[in-house]
Image 1: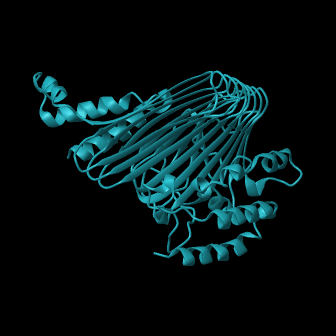
Image 2 (image 1 turned 60 degrees about the vertical axis):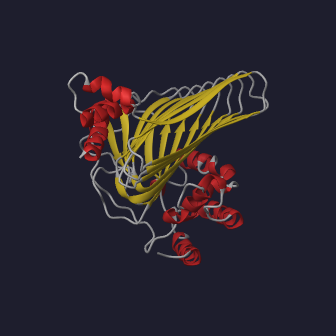
Image 3 (image 1 turned 90 degrees about the horizontal axis):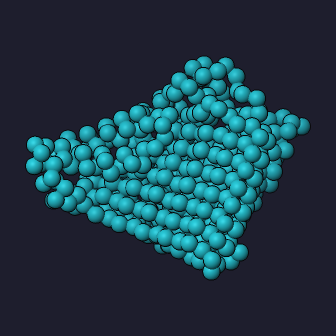
Length: 420
């Protein structure tokens, strides 16, 4: 394991190698490095990292290099890897009209995609990274050697599911740009099987023009590695973003989420199902920024921990002075399956407008003896009863119809492993 000084020196060597790749990014990388040096790397004494082990997302004997693994395949989807390649088992042999999926390095200097890329790349993150909370975003930008642009043209509705098959390690980036009135259903998934890698840093930056609609789901199977994710989105007027997270534990796993509801009447729905066992860690931190009028956000988060695992959840709602008639809510319910696990939950409200409707709540509990007794009185043994209760608790968050069977199987296999 490297100390911080060695890590920074290793990064500096990587910077030199990256200078020959994507030269249009040089100034952006330089700005990111400057902010990173000014703000510093994450540390445990920072408020939003106090339940984390920040060094686990920084230290590695080898800097991350892309590794592919096995992914769940959907027959009715456009299956695409992080090289921007459409696989042969996709629902059709070519991308629909109005949808562009290109690797950054394949975009020609004079193409329309280049203008879109330069306009939107890092536009959300450069403002966030001034806070130490998101300094990992600057680290990703500094070390990035490629990424994938997803662009949907004005008024275009992409009917098939876009299934992005992520690598298991490396510095990865998705830039999602939806023009006015467009619509996309996007699934990101990490590999099902274990692929050796030194770590994953994956960022998704989305820009939704007025009236755009993004249905976004992310599946993270259990892992023995460490991975960091940052999802950031900017919403225009009447735009809608639905984010569904299905996360099993990893040795270290953290997901930072930041939404900016800038346009009037924009809306965000966030749904998350979290499970961790066997000393795994899962952290989910949400920051919902309401800036436009009549904006709406709803967060529903369910977590289950057992066998010395730790889940940490921070849900923040920030209503700015001009965001009148905002409607924002946060519901976080958590279940501890034994006395060795730990769940940290911290809901936050910061309100600077007077015509708003807000609600937030967080609970952590265990399976009650009354519930166990009710099921046992109907001939069900104690262990099966506990399994059924945990299953029902998490199932309410498995809402994606296209791959609900796969999600239920993924979580049920985790529950069976715990029960044994």
